[in-house]
Image (cartoon, rainbow, N blue to C red):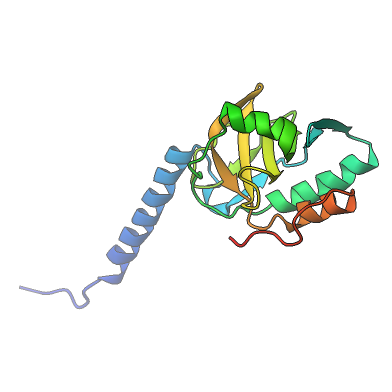
Amino acid sequence: MSYPSKVRVFEPLLILVIFMALLIYLLNVFNTGNWFWFLNNATNTRPTHIVILHYGERINLERGQPEFEALADGIESSLSRLGNSDLVTIGLSDETLSDYATKSLVLELHYDRPIIFNSQARTGEPTQLLIPIEGRHANAGYVFMGAQGEWWFGAVRMADPSALLTSLRELGYSVPEKPPAS
């Protein structure tokens, strides 16, 4: 009887590790509906229309206006990195939305194409975002999502909203000096 001269342990172990990594990756793809779930960022974040709700005043900004471009740059920068890997379990009640319209500083962002949030959470295909700056849920970097005039349950969190806050400050709005700690 002859015995193999070498026992091969490395190759089957390598195949097992590759198979397990691929399995974990594909499970996350099916769970999130996103091939790039691991990037933890957002794409298509330049809005087509911005509404600033400033203590009862509704200010509409369109592409081409200097204020729009400055604010859109801050928005893109702040949404480029997310500060959470799952949805924050928080929603917007009718009372909160009423407060946002009259007693707060809030940004409402509208998009012509859905925003893609590359995260471990299934975020759907939102075409509108709501970012509270002052008032309820402010100072946490929350970004609420929605589409067709409705706001969904759950939020993502910006890793660093300082670029957005700086843009608002430069436009003359009173906003917190430093972003919240994540």
